[in-house]
Image 1 (spheres, helix red, strand yellow):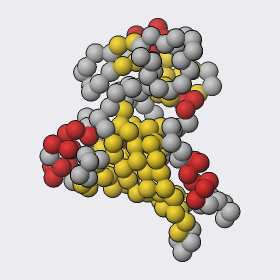
Image 2 (cartoon, helix red, strand yellow):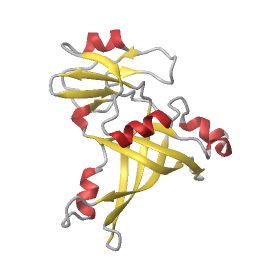
Image 3 (cartoon, helix red, strand yellow):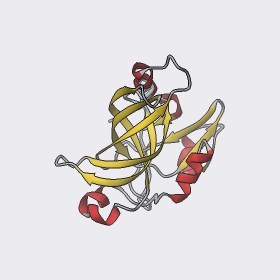
Image 4 (cartoon, one colour):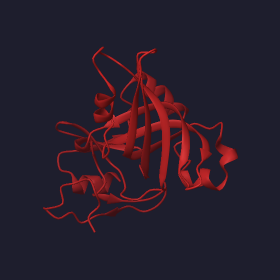
Length: 194
C-alpha cells in the first residue's frame, strides 16, 4: 500500500492506523483485525467472545432520546469495507483509503453521551449520517436472517467524507494484492469509479 499510496497522493506519507482517543486505543489493541464478517457468518458461535474492528460506511441510523440517562440511543446499519489499517498523512490531516469492496452489512445499537443539554436525536443522526465512515469495535452477537451481523457495541469512531476515500485502491483481505483505481477528474465522491 505504501508504494501505491505514494503514487496516488503527492506530499503524503503512509503509516499504521492511529486511534484518535485513549478509549479507542484500548479497543484497537484488544480487537482482532483479521476476523471478517464472512468468517462470522460461517460459524457465528465461534466469535461470540471475540472483539473485532471493522470499517463500515453508514447506511442508515435511527436515534432515540433517552431522557432518563442523558444519552441518545442509536441503531446503525453499516456496509463493511476492507481496510488495511494504514493511514495517509497529508496537509489538512489524515485520510483512510478503504477498499470499495467488503463483506456485507452489520449493525449495532450504541449510545451517545450528550455534551450539551440541547443536543437531541436529530443532532445525533447528523453526526452519524449515512455516507460517513465508522471504525467500529464490537463483539459479534448474532446473524440476522438476511445475513446482517449484529455486533455488541464497544466503541465507534466516525469520520467525515473528507477523511476517507473508497475510490483509489481496490483490495480485499490482508495478503491480497492492491489495485489502483483509475479516477477520472469528474470522480470526486467516495463511491468507486467503474
